[in-house]
Amino acid sequence: MSQLSSETSLISPSHTPTKDVPLRLGVMASGSGSNFEAIAQAIERGELNACIQVLIYNNPGAKAAARADRLGIPAVLLNHREFASRDALDAAIVQTFQNYAVDWVVMAGWMRLVTPVLIDAFPHRILNIHPSLLPAFKGVHAVEQALAAGVKIAGCTVHYVVPEMDSGEIIIQAAVPVLPDDTAETLQARIQVQEHLIYPRAIALAAAQALQG
Ligand code: GRF
Image (cartoon, rainbow, N blue to C red; front, side):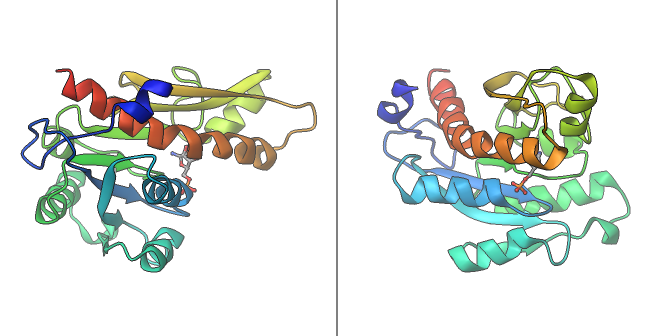
């Protein structure tokens, strides 16, 4: 991945590739937010030329919100229970991201299906991370699905978001072994180590690809 550190991610708010302008990320998280924090740390270490403009979370009390508070990143609660439809929630997400001048959307454990209302507002600029080697084990409980299938290698995938769940173009994957005594928890933990490594790299790679047109 050496090309990622030399090809810094450079996209202006107007979506026009411009050198030395940090990516303006909007992150969506429903729960723990460890990937959100891993991306923030990669930015802090200078490994990703980006700024997290805002975190959107949908569950009051999500640990991701406490991480945002600690990291000094604005956090906006959009509780899906208070919206009449998925489209209405996604319209509010788009409005929030526009308010914060976001130009790349990073779904990091967002446990809701998204609609074309969001997808069409950020064409080819929404990424998601999934805890399997897609196209295997789409949907919920991917780690449990992998264990039940008896696979010997599991992993994670960062991909572009399209209307069909977990089906967009793959950007980066990482593989881990499945050990004989693994539980869902131990395998998930091994996968998450890799998630935290590949997500910042995938963001940089997607931005570099966008620069190349
Ligand atoms: C990750 O395992 C990711 O693959 C899945 O949701 C989980 C989020 O974890 N989409 P965290 O909230 O980033 O810790």
